[in-house]
Structure formats: structure tokens, C-alpha cells
Image (cartoon, rainbow, N blue to C red; front, top):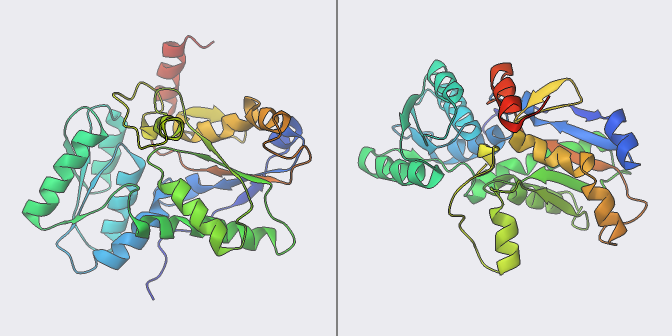
Length: 290
């Protein structure tokens, strides 16, 4: 059996967030993965299954998936080509190149990058690595819930799981993980930002909806912010935290969609490899923050 490339990340109790919401809040710190995000779980699992004897891998990514893919490729002694859209921060390009990836900037959004990655995979005989859309990816991500179940012990389970949603890979993995540990009755609060809310649009329409453009600043959800546990994370990750800070949990309780006396909340802190103080300062200026 192949050795896991991801690490068992800390599960921390947030006193501040617990006070805000009236129940214990646990943070699963996926930003402490070697590649900087939860993406490593699924991408490593997929590559170990499909790419061990390949000529290399190609992955379209605006950031975290690319960082995971190049980390895995290096560990497997494979070349990695990462295709990113022009909307990706220069910081991402720099970090990918520093890790040994061949980086190509193609198109304005993820769909453009994906099309180029498919083309390269076919013409150069590389394994295509999706950032989120493959059952093996979801299977790898499911391990995050298995770890939480082990940490909490047999007599505790979450009242709800709070996650950020972009392409849906983490969501699918969490669903699988909840099934694996017998927590099928635990609700999932899936958070998106306005301008990158394709899941919300799809649920409302009853069909898969493709957004015309990604207008959210949380480009990783088309998918950056500070939060109060002394850690910098991307806005894409901050979307999950907003469920507590913006009163979403309390509103769902008032509407009867969550119990008034809810068990501990599990927040998946999905990652933060594409943020630094310079970007944070630029973002504050852009949004008019003080």
C-alpha cells in the first residue's frame, strides 16, 4: 500500500468562535499540509493510483491544486506541468516555479486552463490531474473526516460541518468521509462567495449552472483573509469561517434548518498558500478597508 503524502493535521478548538456561536467550534487545520491545503489528500491519492508509471502529470489550477500536484510529482520523481489562468496572482506562478513545475499561463479563467491541460495530456502522453473532478480525488479528501472522527473519539460527532465550495472536490470528499465514519445525518454548510457561487446557482436552478464570469475576489473558489487564530488564509478558505462570523449558523437555527442546541461545529480550514501580507494590503485597499 502506498504511503500517504498528506499529514494528519491539527484539530484545534477556537474559543473565540465558540463564544460567537454558542457551541464548541473545532478547526481542522488543512492549511498546515506540506503543500499548503487539503488538495494534497486527493491529488496524492489520484496520482499514486494513476501516475506512478507515467511520463508526468499536467494540472490546470489557479493555485492550491497546482501546489499539491507539483509536490506530489516531486515526491514521485515525475515532471509536472501546471496550467494557470491569467487571473492567478504572480505569487502563485513564482511559488510553482520554485517548487520545480513548468508553468504555462493560458486564457482568462479555469475553463481555458482546463482545455489546454487536456490538450497537453493527450499530445504529450501525460496524466491529467483534475483539481477536483474525479472519484479518486474525493476518496483522498474523505480522509479529513476519518481523522476528525479519530480525534474526537467514539462519543462525539459534529453538529455540522462547515466548508468552502469551489469546484466541489472537498464537498464530495466530506460527503464520502461522513458516510465512511457513519455520520450520514451530520449536515454540511457549504459556503460560497457572491461572484463564485456556481453551486448555489445550480441548486436553485435544479441543474448544473456554469457562471459567465468569476467576479469574486476569492478566485480559488471559481475559487483571501485574516482570521482570528493567528493564521493567514485565503479568502476562499475564509468563506467557511464566515458561516460563524456572519451569523449564517444562527440564521439557519432560527429558520429551523439546524437545531437550536447544536453539537460542536467542524470548520475545514482548507488552505492558504496563495496569500501574503502584500496581497492582503492590496486587498484592504481595493475593498476600502481601514
